Figure (spheres, rainbow, N blue to C red):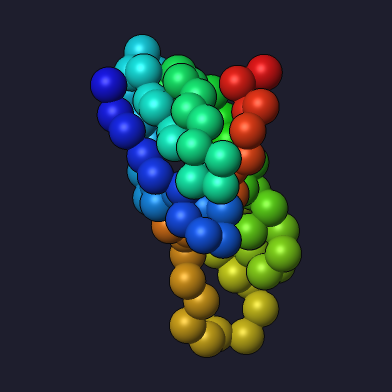
Length: 87
């Protein structure tokens, strides 16, 4: 089992996919509650956060910018989580 800790801003550090069959435990700091998610569900949450990041920064589905050339961070490292995400 993989255990992740939510930070004060409500994010967990996740910069890659986890194995789909892995059990991932997220400890919610504010009330001390704990949820167990599958790797597949957490990967879906990661993909949604990555898509929102790319849309907000005018990047295409693969993370490339077609505008003027400048340095843009291509991925994300922190994913927002909250209680009740197991559904």
